[in-house]
Image (cartoon, rainbow, N blue to C red; front, side, top):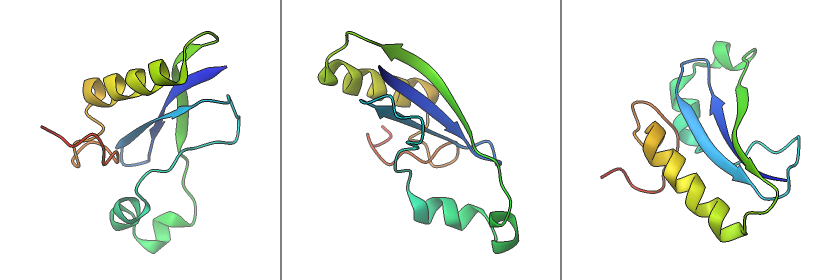
Amino acid sequence: MKWIYKLTFPNNKIYVGMDLTGSLGYFGSPHSKAIAADFPPEQRRDMTIRREIIWESETATDAEVRAKEIEFINALGSNNPTTGYNKWPKLR
């Protein structure tokens, strides 16, 4: 199973990623320095991050999944530093 997921952090900023293997433990690679800047050390000790599968496919090609990921990043605005942690594609 291939899917697109959305991570929601305690500050309500989001990260959109993809998983081509359907791994339960995969949480992508959001920009760690940007996240760290938003959370002081005391908040980092106990936080909950929500992961939602927002799209999935058993038949999509890897290229189709990558295109769908970009579509969701742009639609949800997760590449806008005020609302999300995606650094790519660049906000227009």
